[in-house]
Image (cartoon, rainbow, N blue to C red; front, side, top):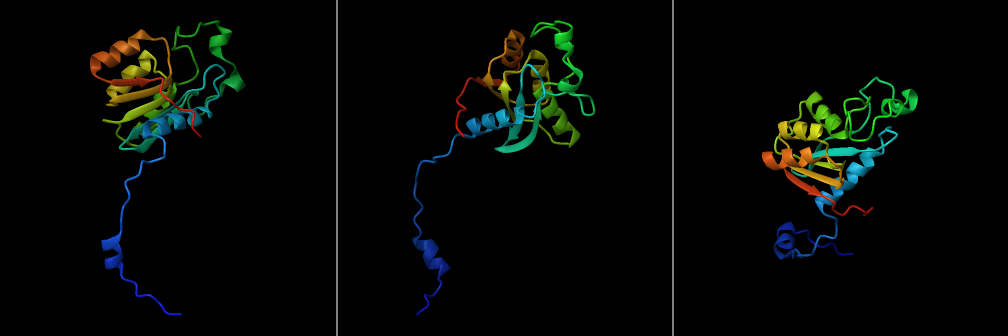
Length: 173
């Protein structure tokens, strides 16, 4: 058997790079799907929410709704909102859990990761409390799958120039 000479320079000179459409899903849809996977860690008995903070197509931090570290989860202690018959969207401060966006922002802060200029992908549109945190964290784009009825969120984002994208595709996978 005769061996061919390995000529990298000639090979690279003659290499043809094809211009083909990328068959993969969009980056936005990919990160939205990841937010759904992250939400699966939630122990909330009402709504499982996941969040992914991304910059330059790289994941900076993730979060899901849950009580603070070391505090009993809802299946252990029960839901204070149910026990006190608090309707959804009212008295948000009366809950053992933190929101997914809050946990993602706290994870970034805990590990010294800047979120300036980043995007956040969330399973549900942020509430107005989370909207304020997102704005002050320097996040510029918010992507969500499902809506949440808080008109103050829209007002904050519009007034502060935060881009809001919702209701996009996500099914793949």
